[in-house]
Structure formats: C-alpha cells, structure tokens
Image (tube, one colour):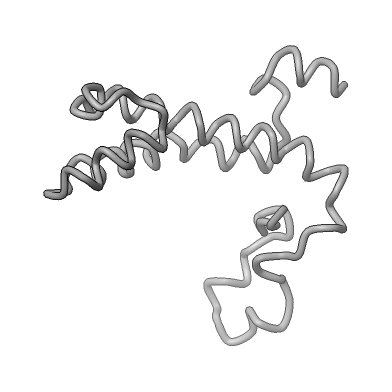
Length: 118
C-alpha cells in the first residue's frame, strides 16, 4: 500500500488527510493575498524566496497561490504516511476529554479531528 501511495501521491489519502486537504485552496489563496497585500517589498521578496519563486513571479497572486498550495499538499501527503506509523510518538496538539467540558460546541470534536505534531 505504501508503494501505491508513493507512486500516486494524493490519491490514497486517509479520511483525516482528505478533510484537511479540502481547505488547501482557501488557505493558499488567503496566504498569497496576505503576502501580496503587504506594503513591505522586502517581506514580499523574502516570502517569494522561501517559496522558491523568482522575485518577478511574486507579483502574480495566482502563481504564488499555486506554489503555496503545492507545498501544503505535499506536507499533508507526507504527514499522512507518518501519522499511522508514528502515531504514538508525536504529542497531541489538543487532547479530547475533560478540557472540552463546559464548551457545548466543542463536544462534537472527534479524536480523528485532533491534529498531532510530528
């Protein structure tokens, strides 16, 4: 199964990774918009450099959005494979249980919705 995941990335994502992956377009659009709306050209150039974009391509929101989207998707796919094999090794960012008592809207949170830090 791991060979198929490696050969066809993004095709065999877990349910949890698929739920996260649905938010990638909005997240990448928001990040690109925030970067390009900055009045600080040094910040924009540094962000473009971190994304691996030539400085001239930082002007196009669509190019930056696509680059951010690809990087986020790659990270989701990479962490999806590690999630199953190293599930016990990473601490939980949030833990289900007593901390949700007293917050009626938070009781619907499932264990599969909890993200772990690799």
